[in-house]
Each structure stands twice: as C-alpha cells, then as structure tokens.
Amino acid sequence: MAEVINMPKMSDTMTEGVIVSWLKNVGEEVKPGDILAEVETDKATMELENFVKGTLLHIGIPAGGSVPVDALIAIVGQKGEDITALISGAAAPKAAASAPEAPAHVDAPVVEETPVASASDNGRVKASPLAKSIAKEKGIDLNAVAGSGDNGRIVKKDIENFVPATTASASKAAAPVSLPQIVAQESYTEVPVSQMRKAIARRLSESKHTAPHFYLTMSINMDKVIAARKQMNEYSEVKISVNDIIIKAVAASLRKNPNANSSWLGDKIRYNQHINIGVAVAIEDGLIVPVVKFADNKSISHISAEVKQLADKAKNKKLQPNEFEGNTFTISNLGMFGIDEFTAIINPPDACILAVGAAKETVVAENGQMKIAQVMKVTLSCDHRVVDGAVGSAFLGTLKDLLENPVKMLV
Image (cartoon, rainbow, N blue to C red; front, side):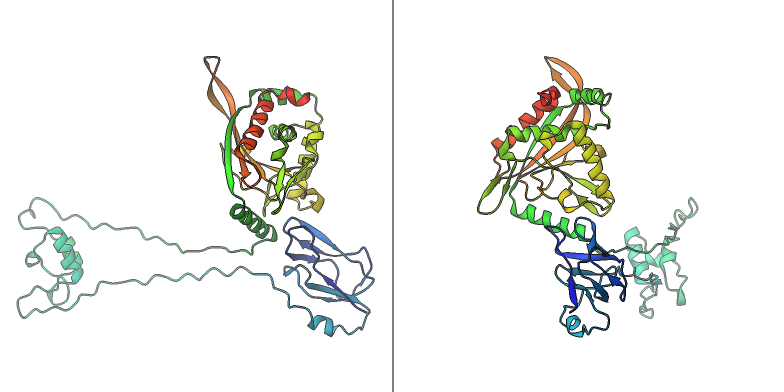
C-alpha cells in the first residue's frame, strides 16, 4: 500500500512550510534515510527525511509552493500502484504567491488651455477663464490688454507678458517661469512573505497585544567592562565581545533574581530553575533567537565561542530546533548599530527581554568631579502579569553592579 507523506511540524511554532527544492524525482527509488526535499520553516531551512521504502509516485507541491502542516506533499509506494484515491482525498496545495508585476507606466495627459467662448457683441471683454483669474490676482484691467488668441481673445500669455502703459518705458515684462520637465514613474516590488517573517509577525503581535508590557531603563558605566574585555582577550582563545560579557552578567543576575526568569502559562506561572539566554540575531529574512543554554554555568569564553557558532548557523539557515527553542530570557542588542536606547517586544514564553543600546562617551559626576565615561543604556521590557516593577528593578540593579564591577562575576 502506498504511503502518504504529509508536511511535518518541524518547530513548535510552525504552521506551514515552503518546499525550497525537491532532491528526488517522481519515479526514483527511495529508501528510509534518504532526503526527499529541503523545507523552509518559520525558523530555518531543514531537510525532509524519508521513512518509507519504495518509489516516489507523486509530488503534491512544486518547489516554491507552501502547504500547511499535515497537508499531503508526496506519495511513496510500489511502481504502477493506483494512487488516484489518495490524491483526490488530499486538500489542494496552496501555490506560492508570486510578486505582481509593476504597473506599466502611463504618460500623464497634456492639458492645454482652451479658451471658453464669451459674449463679444455686448461689449464684454473676450478672455479665457484662466486669463481672467490671473488678471484678477495681479490687479490687471483686461480692457488694457491686447489679446493674441482667436478673434482677439485674451489668453494666459497675454496677461503674463502685459506691461502697464505707465511703466512700459521703464521696465520690461518679466519672463515666464519655465519649470524643467521631470521624467519619472511610480514603481514598487512585492515579494511573498517568508515563513520566518510570518512567524515573527504572528508571535510578536500576540505578545504585544496579550502581555501587558512595562519598561524600566537604567544607565550603566561600562568603563570597567571595556578594560576587562581588553585583558580577557590577551588570554582567551576566542575574541570576546562586550555582548558576551553582557550575556554572562544577565545569567548571573537571573540566578540572583529568579523571579525574572519566569513564564506566564495562563492558569499558572512557571519559575524556571535553569537559565537559557536567547540572543536575537538579525538575518536576511528577519530575526531569529538562538539559545545559549545553562549560560550561568559557562565561562565567558565558552559563551563567546557558542554565540559565534549559533550566529553563523542562523545566517546560513542551519540551526536545528533544539538550538532555537527553550529560552527563558532574551537579549536584543542594537548597540553595535549605534542605537542609543530602544524598547523590545517580549519574546514568548519569556516574561522579560533586555534591550541593549550602545556605550557612548558621556559626562558623569563621580565624587564631586566631572569625568568622561562610557555609558550604556539598557531597557527591560516586563510582562506585568508575571514580573512586577520591584522584581524588574532588582534585576537591573544586580546587572548594573556586575557590569560596573565585572570581577564579581568571577566569584
């Protein structure tokens, strides 16, 4: 009997998948362990493994097409087997959207001034409506203007070139303003929304509308972190960044403030005993959050090497589900892009996300003296259903203490 292969659920948030490419063709023999296709999910591009021995009899969705989870995408069976009933019983796949063509350029019609007939036998001045309007604005008596239009009708250029008799000898009429012709057309490009971008839109919209966010901002003197990083890199086998130190400090702060390491589950609150830090990484299709698991138990150099490896996998769409699931707290750092401060939307199921800005030279007061220091602003977004202001403030206080005295992270 032929076996139907449906679109599997490859991540906890996946609702549909896109077939990037088929690696097997109809009529080819396949065996368990063969890779049938590459599938784009909301998190990464993953391989679709075959578990049936036989012949690939039918491909239900072409490369580039998308189908919901559990929809038919292929059938494997014996050569010559009748699969008509299986195909007809499956829902028709949804074809991938294609970008509509940009509208063709249409030249704007040229509108010429057409004089409107007016009475002339009764002594009224013959002039076009536009000429009358301009003459009224300029205070010109139409009786003093000679018309150059049909039957002596006064037109626009007659008004623009008119010089009153009292000043004709003293001045010349100003030349009309000639605007350059602009050649342009409206255009745009539309592309189908990727599975990742759909997931980002859905999850963050749900988070923003269901979780009551509030925000806490704190300034942190980063002079000692910058100096410590310089010393660490003299001994570390991997280049340590400021972000790596921040991850370690956040993990240590969560260990001291466990109520911030929590999740809202509707009818209960989960207080996580483990500390898994999600690190937001920008990629071509959007944003993905690889997870540094058990971050509080890892050295800064270990964290540095792991973050670089995860970021590289994310940018090449090679992350596996276990590498982007299980976060208990998230960090979003835009300081490297020169952003001073910002607020971030909570990444479910976390109750908090830390937005990290750039360290900037700032005048600060210390012991009654003014000095220049590298000051970084961080903003903690909290789910008020789980984390109160006092809990968030205590967490930020601990984080500030650790970053302004980084040696405390070592004891």
